[in-house]
Image 1 (cartoon, rainbow, N blue to C red):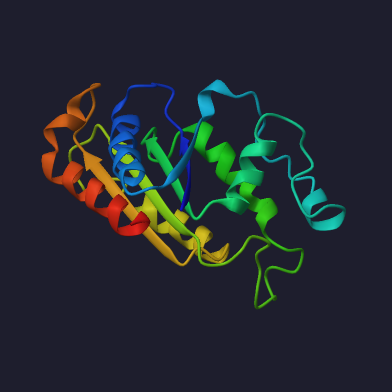
Image 2: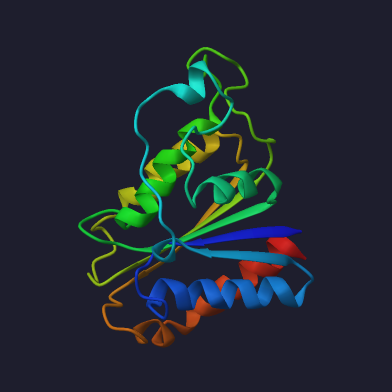
Length: 190
């Protein structure tokens, strides 16, 4: 089992990174191979809307440090995306990555019965952490990204979400969520 972990937080030891660490440690304990990418350490641009991935190439035309990350999604069995919530959505680092996944869709994706270029059946885990304690606030984030990744052929998508975790280390008080995170990792990778 191959896991590609993409961390969208600019804080290396922030709450979303810590929760993903629990997931990855549990997955590794049952034999998963892990590749972790910290987006804030890469130099890359967001989607340019150039449509080259629909007209000239079967991948994103941009040559930057995100090129290999996008290619690694093709060989991953599980894609773990982790991000804090900034201004009602994933971080700009994560959003730029997600926008670049537009290249995973074939040119006629709106009418094609198989609209994606990557192998079907991958699993997505989206870790979201937010400072606001109200679970109703920003609850729509997972729904929209679940929609897009199902469009890419991801068949089993999960959300792990922590609310009320503003300061680094606050996630440690969410013992039930940590247990759920570890359990999901062993279930998906064991």
